[in-house]
Length: 268
Image 1 (cartoon, one colour):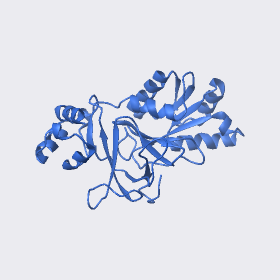
Image 2: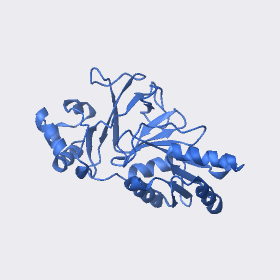
Image 3: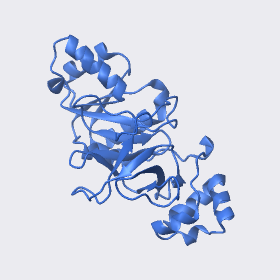
Image 4: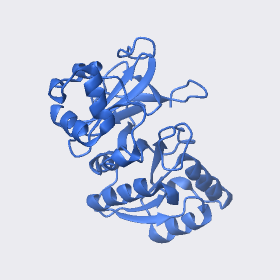
């Protein structure tokens, strides 16, 4: 943790100023409990973002069932450039073959899915819903058309040109990823616990909005993200999302959380 804190302070004026205000040195951060000496940061100059890590996407996509040799249709808006490029790179490292497609052209996507025998679809919930609707109108079996579906849940207000809250996957679609263009993939959905597991080097806190301390499991709170990779450090960043920590551990990971929809207050 100290290595990530040192790298963050050296690279980012916002992080450096927070350490100074708190009277702390990056070397003072040795355990997660030490983070509470720093207030969350809610805005960082885009020039100071180091770029999204690829490893988190690779971990998430593999956990979602993708394997070497799979042909994967990626359907993301052109203005989501950093996210799309990082996902394609992660797919390539897994040995998959990414096939880019326009996000809002469901008919063309169906043609690609059929002609290339794609194993999976990576895209936003709204675009996947449109594809499923088009497949229904064409009399196609969606489960045969897309055996695996990975749906991105892009955090509120932090995507490149994509505002709005996280959205749940429609119907019985595949697993979701919780991500931002700046920080990369922060968590992936688990089919055992109906929640998200943080990716490698990602620490997720859920804080009580009144006390600023960790919320009790099962109680909603604000999401705070720390990335412990010294190459791409991020210390106590508040993306503007809310979540609930799971009440019990999951066999696939010790920590899981559910996103909360801002409009309804229901779990996502």
